[in-house]
Amino acid sequence: MYEYESAQPTAAAVSREEVTHYTLDNLILMFFVFSVTGWVWEVIYIAFTEGVVANRGMLHGPWLPIYGGGGVLILLLLGRFKQHPAIVFVLATLLCGTMEYMTGIAVEFFFRCRWWDYSTKFMNLNGRICLEGLMLFGISGTAAVCKGGPALQSAIMRIDPKIRKALRIALCTIFIIDLVFSLIFPNMGVGVTYALLK
View 1: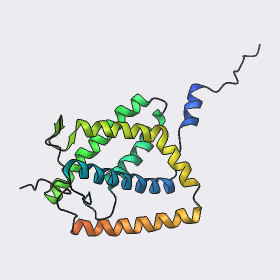
View 2: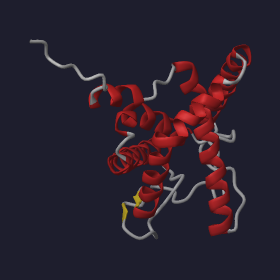
View 3: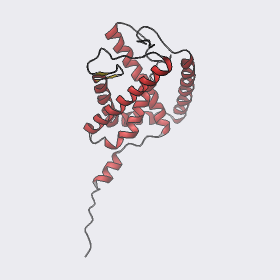
View 4: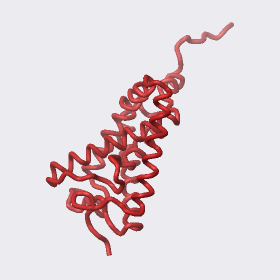
């Protein structure tokens, strides 16, 4: 007697096949896409809520690395759950909230200043995170894992490899220069920094 073996793939095999695998080269470019997108979002948000057009973030360039780092981490850590958006939403909210809170502590410790302050927001924790921001992180993180990440990787792969390499080198070089300069002379001002700490 021979056991009947189904031609249908198992659920585990299907889930493994459906996980998007990202290369380091593509993740570098995705980091900058997420960083710039986050910067654009915050510039628009601050313009509407505070009436100030400001270059957001500690760095001087048009990027916010906390969005880039958070986006890449979400894709790497939560991609296995992309068939379960509710789980992705909860985990993305927790991951991004923790990252934002810890970054806030680090920035305040080293620079004695706040680059964001949610003290007036509903359900905030020490002004470093708030419910509104966490919900946005959860929604955008879920969108990135379930649709945005794979689509972005597909778009990047359509770019000529030589152009992709040149972009990576140029962006990383400019970013490192901006980072070093900003550690010495951080970007500050109206709509950029908030409470100065004693």
